[in-house]
Image (cartoon, rainbow, N blue to C red; front, side, top):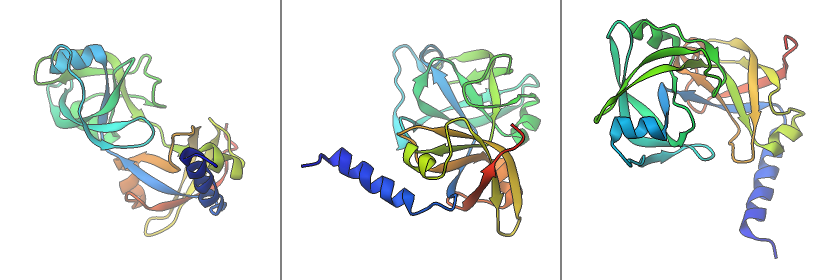
Amino acid sequence: MYDTDTIAKAVKSVLEGLNTDGQIKVGVSQRHIHLSQEDLEILFGKGYELTVKKYLMGREFASNEVVTLVGPSLKSIENVRVLGPVRKNTQVEISRTDTFVLKVSPPVRPSGNIEGSEKLVIVGPKGSVYLKEGVIIANRHIHLTPEYAAMNGIKDNDYVDVEIEGIKPTRFYDVQVRVRDDFNVEMHIDTDDANAAGLKNGAKVTIIKKSDRR
């Protein structure tokens, strides 16, 4: 007899194998923040733990907790969602449009690459944190399961080009691919990219080839 995990993985693999044309779903990422345990406790109180609002992909979840971001001009963006679980380092992911409000100039980076990135102040109900680095604009990226990646000849950290059809057809170049067994098959872009291409959550885009610029 096979256990339920083995059966679930087999079914998932078969279903993904039916889609070998490179077409994947889009997930539009709103501005959000990942907190370290130290910063979480400064913002929300000693020993505080995040509470789950909605489970996302893999180990991540949207929490019920929100914070306020304050830029050097003292202009702010309120109700920025905290994603869990806690991380080693605090990281803020915003769009280019948000930078005009906050008056900051973060680099476009893969998640986790925060060295030398932008700074700002984070305000919570119990305190505030001056973040010396950690503010980025997340690069366009695709999450794949190992099964889907193998079916389509793609490896972790490959870069691919993606074609968007519809009312505002366009093409995204050099989209980073990340492969992990707890991922869903999904491309993540921020609200600026989604609006520019006329995309919404659940829209379909097509991987057309590996990037030849990398």
